[in-house]
Length: 121
Image (cartoon, rainbow, N blue to C red; front, top):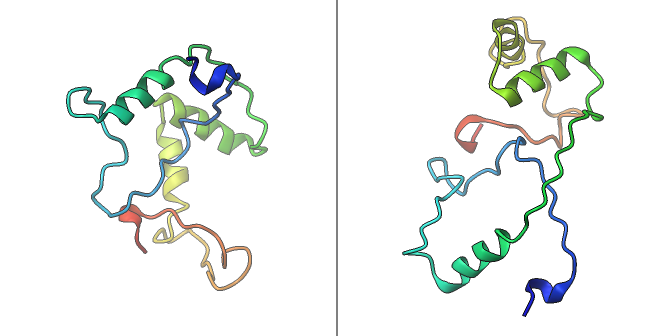
């Protein structure tokens, strides 16, 4: 009767990462729960998910080594960006005059994933 046959399950993720690209430019990334319209499988899935009641929150950043970038990420995560953070991000835009020219046909950019508005270049 137990979900997953009573086996312990661990879910991991970073809800502060970029959301996945939607199937089309205007498609919603997330859907609100609607228990009235959801089918039986969706309702069961939500009930099982809600049984996960232990949350472990990691607070130490170990991947980022640049202190300025780490500071920016902390402020973005907390919704407390300052003018210098916005200026820093704007300087990374390809259309910014101070941004160095990038040749996307060369390594390491050749196989890189580009984050663009509306999922298009």
